Image (cartoon, rainbow, N blue to C red):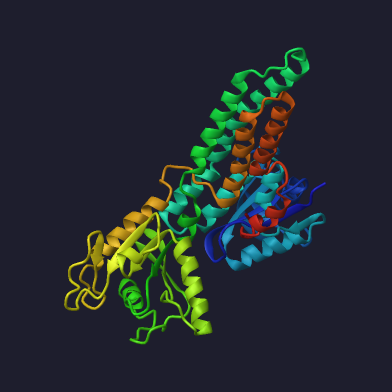
Length: 425
């Protein structure tokens, strides 16, 4: 039998009201120990809370009772809405700790119990974790879409189609033994579902929205990269000298452009060098340029790396002969500010193309990985000409879906996920 747990589920006191939650098989007994009789299920009532050992009055609180399994955790729950002083909260928590069978909850334990009891799946738990950490409206909307079960419902539709394919395959294996030919409809249906999953995998991911779009400024030494970074940041964040190789490591600056979170990154000048330390910085700069979401290139346009979202910039546009940039490039002066606003607008435009639409469900890296496993199994199944081999690919696809929703094979991610939650959640 699971322990009965309790915790402060609202913000730290002092506050106008604090919510203390109890969940588990002994929740109702614990609630009665402090409040006397509990109100009817899902009905709020004012009760005097008293210490079960001393009978001392602790507070007058609003008390709510919820009966399993139709609760947030799937267990019996009691909530006390108390006055939010530190003294009141500490006294109620201390009284609960003295009741046999109760213990303080660990971080994220209420939500973990909701997952373990089938009240939410792993995608909803991940969305809730993101919602608690959201700092922008875009992050809030993306997290809410997951937390409210948007992806779970979509996965449910895919699973229903997959189960139908599995049932058809098993039936064909059992009853079509005399016919070795495989119904072409199997391949078509597997391929159609695989293509639908592929279209979801092509969508922008949630990581740039959570972590910021990686915007890398790269180019040869003394191209004006650090000066441009400082001009965009509005302060001296990087060292600027006329000595080639001044920047030897990357410098990342979090910013927001038009509400779009970006990670503006200065890099070492790209050149061949015999300096061992600078060479490490050059190698890192190359890797960052390749990994960037948006690459701002300061250097000859014909020397720019191939990149899906490339901006070529002619820096130092205040110097003679540099006011006119080559076709497709932007002339920018970090010194005078000329051309800086068009560059920022161009960066913002490209950065937005990396982000998911506000009304779309965005996959994280883990979810996309399991969805890709499902797609690959279905694609392989669509090419099969043997029923038994097809059924095996369908089984692999079902297993990947189960890992996606948390039904199987996710023990290694649970501790890390629920450790992101605060106490009482």
